Image (cartoon, rainbow, N blue to C red; front, side):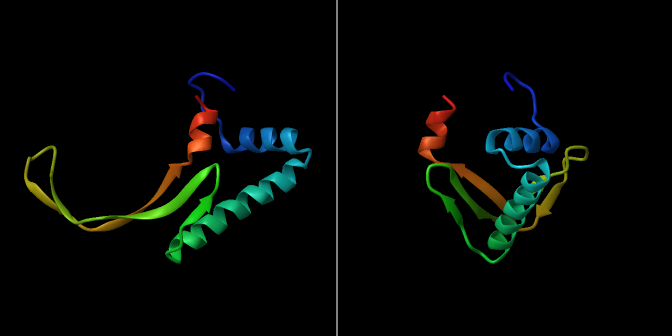
Length: 96
């Protein structure tokens, strides 16, 4: 896949199966397990670091005042947590 296209889950699983030689069913299960494991780790406050690829962690967002775009009135935005991925150097270089 090249250019500005977006790979969906089905296409990702197909490519994973072709690359690994595993069945699509096994790749689907592996992808689901990977996602669930990352979610569980982040919920527990852990950071997941894959050397050469990158790291997944939770970023804390402080409470802040925003504006309602229609009325321009100030709106309090509560503190929140957001998942974040930071690409590792090797991964960044691989896609250059």
